[in-house]
Length: 419
View 1 (cartoon, one colour):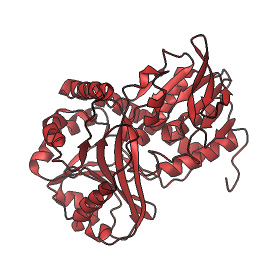
View 2 (tube, rainbow, N blue to C red; view 1 turned 180 degrees about the horizontal axis):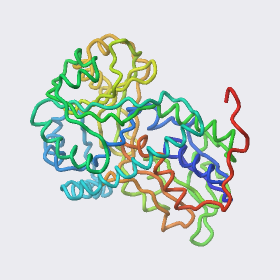
View 3 (cartoon, rainbow, N blue to C red; view 1 turned 90 degrees about the vertical axis):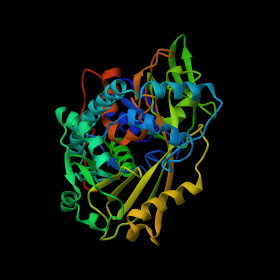
């Protein structure tokens, strides 16, 4: 049994802590916030996009880059920085945009998404957690025939990999989701993925943290900010907090999202991670809300019904770390959502406004590896907008990297009613 410190209690860190504890390790889960799921996991799009692991750097985005750079695309915004790391990130991003690199990156992400889907099925069967998970399916709504035709090659490639996707007319899409008759946006057709799911990522973090603390050897340290590490020779020795206290462990997993860059001096492997800020609005769900997850391709909006709530998420702002959110972006998001679903977003009460930084690499492929600079430290970050989708697969790979004790115990006690 190893003592492992997991830094970061979002979906990546919580998933890593759970599977490491389940494998027989003694785990301490650490976060600067007061509860799990408080950062990028708090208000994400909720979609578990098993078949949509498309890398962000792509031929299509490359063609659109001049409009983005000039500020003509309301969904994307780049805050230019005279920062060598930012410029290097941008050059690497462009290098990943050609088709061969995009498809290689996308295949890698899709493979990891498939591993996550399998792990989630096991987790649900073993824990019985309920975080508004359901197999909702997803409709990608295309505004015109040109957009729909451009999507077809990727559909064929993904079907060849074992995913199920179908090209639909608007009428066929409305049969699957009747609420689309009220959709005011342009819909020439849709790509339907019946196997995609959704769930409340923040609820998942809270429930799974509580579950593993009750059933495995897991300790929780919240409101603790990690400042770095101490070492013995070239090996990790302790986690060092900002109040100079230390936590002794045999290994550490760094899953702190874009905040990993604060540790870049000790872990140069995390330098490729940049924050991409997103926004969401959560409303009270009404009878007019669609049950199927929707993505508006033109406006780059994602819609999801999560229990009694309805959420729109979107926007991608590439900015300097710690820049903070722009209140005007919430208004831009609500305006775009109201254009297509006016009954839900005109005059409705906003239950939650969220903005968060997602950790993005130039290739969109996460960094899941041991650190070469500091032995005993493992990195699990860089999942971008797909952290919720890729969390459990990434955690499984982390367990495989670290290894597991010869004997893997089950829960220390059986779940009780009310747990």
